[in-house]
Image (cartoon, rainbow, N blue to C red):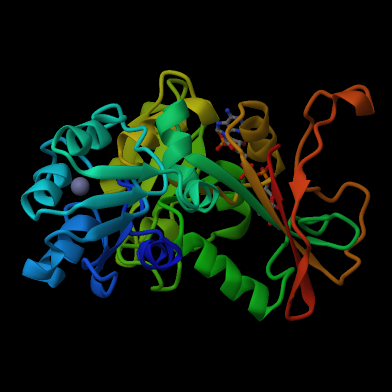
Length: 352
Ligand SMILES: NC(=O)c1ccc[n+]([C@@H]2O[C@H](COP(=O)([O-])OP(=O)(O)OC[C@H]3O[C@@H](n4cnc5c(N)ncnc54)[C@H](OP(=O)(O)O)[C@@H]3O)[C@@H](O)[C@H]2O)c1
Ligand SMILES: [Zn+2]
């Protein structure tokens, strides 16, 4: 199962809206005869790849797979049928598939055909591997990661708004890798106006993650690197208050617009889930970060801390007002051990 989990992770960031899945096939003597993983949506499922590799040697063997085999006709035919047809004797599964079209149906189909099924092997690791997919299945929204870079004194920009670059090259490269694992990268209008960001993985993910701007006013610059969509697509989501003139300007630039009747982080994430996003990265400033946290749209935090004292009492900090009035109201996040990225420190937190 550990090998199957490793295989599944090879496609990290490429399978949305589908989960990551890996499979290993053993013959009757427990000799490895096939391996596979789901490379991207529309590509063959892991089980089918492993079965194809094994051919006749699969008969009577054991299939080890990180997620319950599917039992529905999606873009590809059901894997449960393929497993039964190949004469597999035993299937070992890490966890059930919560997708309502599967949800135990794959296991039931296998058992009904006389295949022995063992479930729950390495289930914690499998749940972590597909945390984003599972979060979308449970909530209808992609999993949100909020990332910021700050000086040791907690500032994310100088008093005049300048913030490039707080962190060093190693940390910035790590952020490109983080974007590779995300289906969309989101900023607010404030960050577009201040930083003119590029927001790509610098080619690490193909296609690049969708770059999303959330803006109520649509008071956005006429020229911005986000409007050049040669490298990556851009979507601007806005509310009903956005003036027609500003909407027209974006249409002329060929930038896709999405009107949200409710211009909130929740409404945006629901729309992105419908477009197949499992995981999104919030790279916004304090105003939108506070709104996203307040809306429950952030499950993980990645803070890059640079050994710099930036100073300035009015200078911005990572998150705006959250409305707390007593420390007892402030939730505590589960933290991993911080580690060094060049001369910076990376500290990652998970919601409890
Ligand atoms: N160091 C870092 O990691 C980092 C990262 C990002 C930004 N920054 C810095 O942060 C500063 C910008 O901060 P910011 O807070 O203005 O940027 P922001 O959070 O990216 O943008 C705020 C904007 O989001 C839009 N928005 C749309 N719907 C919203 C909603 N429901 N709730 C809240 N906002 C909504 C509004 O745009 P409209 O005004 O267009 O309507 C709002 O003004 C800059 O100095 C930048 O350099 C630093
Ligand atoms: Zn399948």
